[in-house]
Length: 238
Image (tube, rainbow, N blue to C red):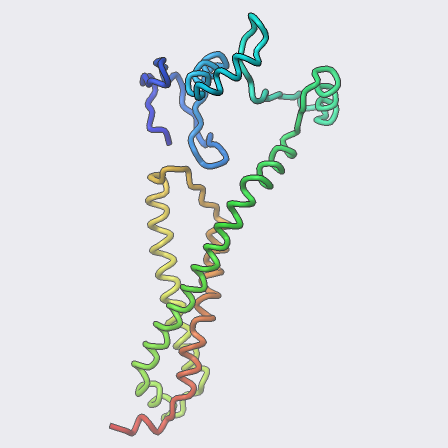
């Protein structure tokens, strides 16, 4: 969010601009908010913010008496029955410009920007999952050892191993689900206050829940193995 209000005046460069409208869900590929203005105003602002060396080179390459105004891209809206391939071919043939369909742009953006960020975040996520598994496993193991006499008593009275295993699994799952619920609630409450826009998809939340369940099940192995090794006779000790 930009935090701007309708009718508010802001200074960009050396000029003042008035906010005449607000948009929703318009962000750059990095999640930054997008500011929309007329083409002429955008060119003036860009020219003001360019370093002096860039301005000199641009002015030197510009034709005599011509303009140094530049346009990075032009968005073309087609009729519903128009074919993107025909429009792209016509622009390339008669305008000598490079044209791309929406799918091609998404592929380039995904491959050059999003894919690298996704791999980096994925590596961080894997490291955090490994650390979380170890931490939960140690907690479950410690809690199991604290209940060593109670587990030995259950074995002494004839409780099957599946009962003890289910108790430890329930303990690990309860820790994971409570942590997931608290984390999900905090993210829902704080997502609008992040510097960049955060989108929370229902499918991503479901996948995360499944991962947490798997992590808890794997982490509970430490406690289960320790519980199954407890001697029932230890319940009779002091």
